[in-house]
Structure formats: C-alpha cells, structure tokens
Length: 77
Image 1 (spheres, rainbow, N blue to C red):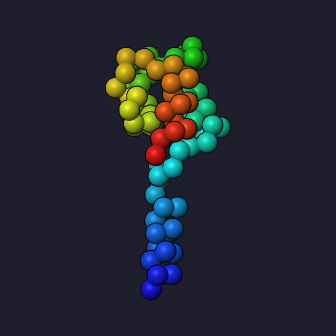
Image 2: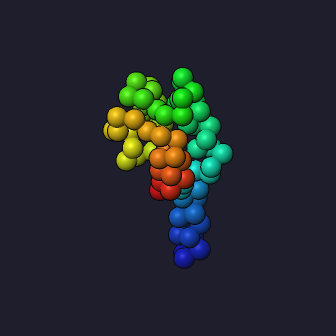
C-alpha cells in the first residue's frame, strides 16, 4: 500500500506542469520569446502578450528586467 501511494505521488509530481522551477536554459528561451524588441526588458505590452507564460508574481509589473525574470523563473515552484 505504501509503495502504491509513493508511486502515485511521484507520478503526480512528474506530470504536473510548473511543479518545479525551470532550468536556466528554458527560462532564457522563454524570456527571448517574450522580449519582442530584444531590448532586455519586457514592457507592459510584451508582458500582456506573454502573461500566461510568465512566472507568477511578476506578471503584474509595469516592466520586467531579464534579471528579475530569470530569478522568478528559476525559483518558481
């Protein structure tokens, strides 16, 4: 019984998107995709376009620097 519950818990954790922080390469790709004018900062319009892909906690800001994005993305749980 304990083994079955443990296997189920592991399966749920592995299959749950966004359950763990993304790696730096994935976060970098996400930032590049959202930074439409390649200025290193996500403006309000870029944030609006990519809001569903942004880490929680930073999507309501007026602008997001790459540093802030990477910190939130790699530390999001």
